[in-house]
Length: 57
Image (cartoon, rainbow, N blue to C red; front, side, top):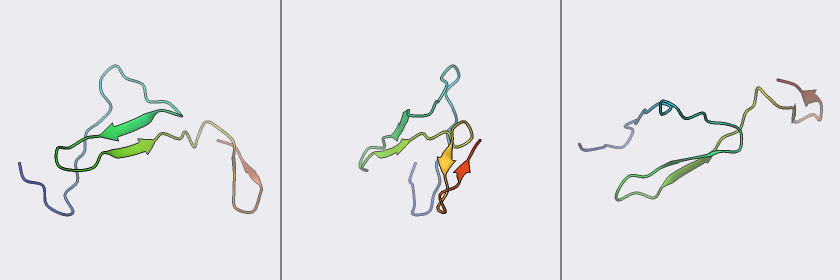
């Protein structure tokens, strides 16, 4: 299969795996640098907005 610029690869969560805050998700494709993303739970923890107020999820 040939990938072209702009193509999107969608997968999904593997069956029995639960992805949680702090996990690292990696995608490896031969010939490319790995795509590595940290997981952040924005709904389940307090965050500070730019103006300094607290946002609760």
